[in-house]
Image 1 (cartoon, rainbow, N blue to C red):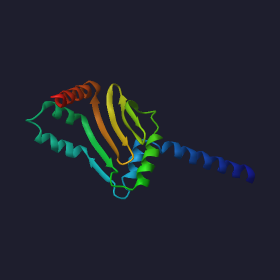
Image 2: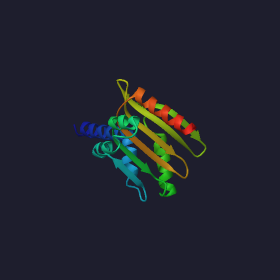
Image 3: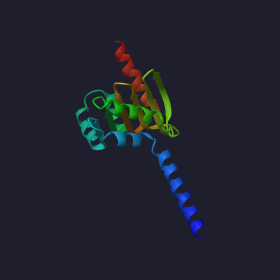
Image 4: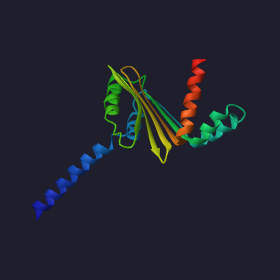
Length: 166
């Protein structure tokens, strides 16, 4: 009986440990892990601040105002001033992110890093937009949450690219 109990506890502990390792590699845990690193710059703009910003943008660009209505929060993490060890650790963890819930739109692989833009969709609406930039000297992560219609996102991207061409 003791042997069975011992084997049961051993199996349960190893399955719990392996499950925690698999769950830990997502965008939210990456943000939570590195936002407290020494010299990391972390910013979170919440729903209340976006509501406040809408009052100042009423008379200006309609596209910006409609986009602000769709965004709930933005989290930004910049590791530019962190040590090389922190950046290297970020790069290796960012490469291992579990992409089952996200669709990768763009990925650019470089010799010493990569850049990736991913979205999480539900019923044709973008719920999360993730931008990961992991290079040797600069590592950053941006997470935008909200309910952004895919058509609205393409309109904004096209209007911004037209402005840059001018």
